[in-house]
Image (cartoon, rainbow, N blue to C red; front, side, top):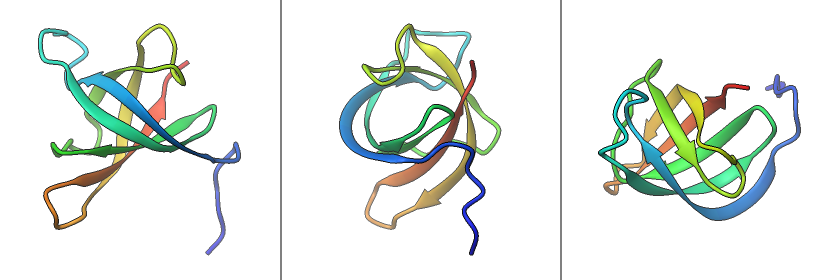
Length: 89
């Protein structure tokens, strides 16, 4: 399988706060960044997110609370989810 990513991914275990709706920052959830690049993040979370859903991400890796879009989500079967986010610039 060919990797189609524009930027190389870097492994990282970093706490991240995210809001599941860009229109309301009243619900802030916490997860972990598994890896990242300039264009995307692999998020480990306890809550599922829907493909196409827009979220706001706030972390050292993504400064200034950037919007991101869920590209894919995988239920790991242990109450956690691995979620691919495309960060908007």
